[in-house]
Structure formats: structure tokens, C-alpha cells
Image 1 (cartoon, helix red, strand yellow):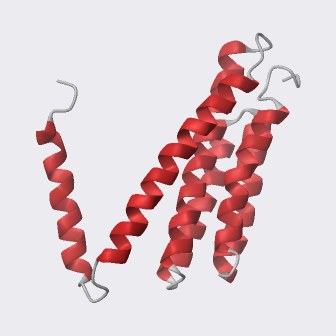
Image 2 (image 1 turned 90 degrees about the vertical axis):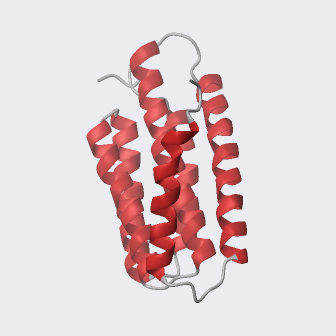
Length: 165
């Protein structure tokens, strides 16, 4: 695959930004940090080569780092930020690969990727704000089973909303 046919260097750079956010957020947790480094490298290789499987393995490493840090009792705010960084890494890299495959060496792909990145980042920051506000107003001694059942109930109600029908 030639350089022009794959995702641009701009696409690789845009993928790196949220991966670094994940890395920095997890850096205080040893095992999580090692997984985040491996995940970041995998994601970058995947997007550079235009290989979704390699990207998926790399992003799985980022998500594993978030999971390890969360289970280890790492600061929930940093875990949430790292999770957002992992999701953005996957989203931006997938979009960069998709643009490269669909448009090839055609029009300038930077504007498309930048617009998608800005939009996704706004959504991620909004979701992160909701999570952090929710975390700050909920009692700390709430049993885990109650939280899981509450979330399961909310998910069960989603089909009843009939959004867009």
C-alpha cells in the first residue's frame, strides 16, 4: 500500500491525540500504563497501515488499561477521562481509515477528519461531563448490585423510547 493510499499522517496525528490523553490519565497506575502504551502503539500502527484488525487490538489494549486502572481503585475521574480518550482514539482512527479507503488520494481529507474529530470530541466531553456530574451526586456507599440493576433497568427502557419512529 502506498503512502498516499493509506490514512494520511494527519490522520495518524489525530489518532495520537486522544491516545495520549488516555496514556496521561492512566500514567499513575503501573499495569494500566503498560497496557496503555502497548494499546497506543497498536492503534497507531493500525491506522498508519490502514488495518482495522491491528487497530482493534491496539484499542482493546487501551480499554484494558482503563479496566485495570478502574478495578485497581484508581481515581474515577481519571478513569473516565482515559475511557473517553480510548473511545475517541478508536473513533478517529476508524474514520481516518474509512476516509482513506473511500476517497483514496482524492480531495484533501484533512477537513473531513478534522470536522469529525471536533464533533466526536464535543460529544465525548459532553458525555464525560454527564458521567462526572452523576458520579459526584451519587452516594459512595451504594451497593454495586443496585447500580448494575439500575443500569440494566435503564437499558431495558431504551427501546420503549421509540426514538426516530
